[in-house]
Amino acid sequence: MTIRRILVTIAAAGTAIAVALPAEALPAFSTTAKSATDPSGSMTQLWNLRTGNDGTFDRIVFDERVSASGYSVRYVSRVVYDASGQVVPLKGRYFLRVVINGAATTSSMPTVRTPGLPEVAQIRTAGEFERVVSYGIGLNRYRGFRVFRLTSPTRLVIDVLH
Image (tube, rainbow, N blue to C red; front, side, top):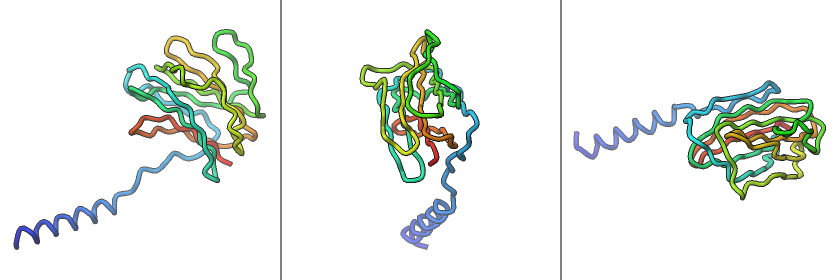
């Protein structure tokens, strides 16, 4: 066998293996609380908040710098400010509380966003103290959601089903 033929055979085998490997599946939508611990222990910097709609779900993206953070996302009857315990004024009928551990925000991070999406009515900061940042998300309906991370760059993603 010539070197060229060996390389072609190896390349073809590698392609077949790569095609056969399944892509990592996204988590399922549900209404149960979701959480993950801080994987790095390093301080995360939240620098941007984006929203979008893909037709079947609304997406909220927290852009992170330095490292990934820990998080907790769950339905609550009302969102309160961390320091005062006063109710956070949020548009919507149902509410998700998002707590991001090991994090701080930058001055570019919005404190309120009203995206006009089918399910996400409003997102508002609920507190930032001792490396814990909190947000309230006002929803129009009680829907399943999922939370996961994306990398390169690091992002925390919350999808809310339509």
